[in-house]
Image (cartoon, rainbow, N blue to C red; front, side, top):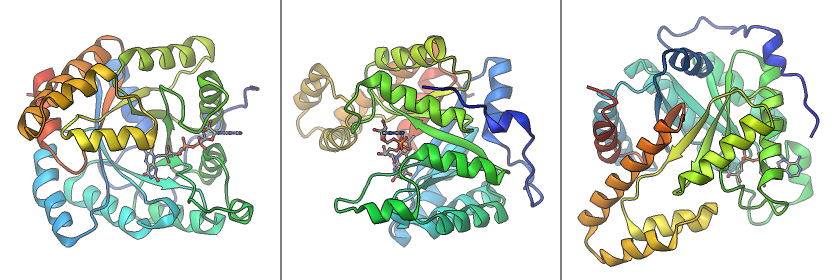
Length: 318
Ligand SMILES: Cc1cc2nc3c(=O)[nH]c(=O)nc-3n(C[C@H](O)[C@H](O)[C@H](O)COP(=O)(O)OP(=O)(O)OC[C@H]3O[C@@H](n4cnc5c(N)ncnc54)[C@H](O)[C@@H]3O)c2cc1C
């Protein structure tokens, strides 16, 4: 795959609005921590569907995670724009009330360019400086017409955002290859390189349970493709057997047979599953950091308990 000059290296970003105090470009956070050998800690939320969920996120989860002094938070985006306004409102509120850099996710599938442009303009007006640029999953019934209105792949979204300036851009990476890629993992990873060549500053990975998958992915990107941006593992602590089986089936991550059997052996004992999941994730994170991972991105599922325990087990915060 040909290498394209990274437009972001040629010119400094020029935000059109005064930056909110304390809110930073995530690429700068990684650069600073990297030079000091400190891992970057981040936590991902989804926009709650109910007022009760909002209360739980803002009154319980965020205060508990703030104690860990996260380097950034991120908020997901419902494919097709279903959480458009909510994603931006939550990111804005976290940044204003908690003073922590927060990234808005954005998917481009089945979305027009003008809608994407509006979202990004609004994000910039709200002082949001970081976007995770994604394709999203196609609706079950999609048509060529939908693709014509916007972008087919996320590298096109990355390029579009990069030209708008004023954002640090993250992108998704898949240590086991993307579920829909039929050409093999190296082809999928070369496509990730294309996103970085178009201006993405860092990679957050899909969940995985075998660290060898992450290291093979990272080593191919770095040693074979010459990637220099941070490649941060995405961590999902197992808290519920049925839930992790559903999630892995949906996203194509492997739930190793021995791990599935171990979870099954706990039966309905939810506390035992959660204790085991937290211990497993702690050991996984420990080995990832020891192997040079630049940080940890936790899929929090809007809860603080597991991440707090894991960060405590790792001794990453006082
Ligand atoms: C950290 C993280 C956060 C996420 N957050 C969200 C979220 O907030 N909302 C949401 O809806 N989803 C989210 N997702 C899921 C993501 O949208 C899906 O996994 C989606 O299917 C792929 O998105 P992508 O940006 O990697 O797509 P792409 O990079 O576009 O890749 C998608 C597929 O197309 C293939 N491909 C890429 N380029 C080409 C090309 N030039 N020619 C042919 N094939 C190509 C790739 O190999 C891959 O199979 C997230 C995933 C991760 C890892």
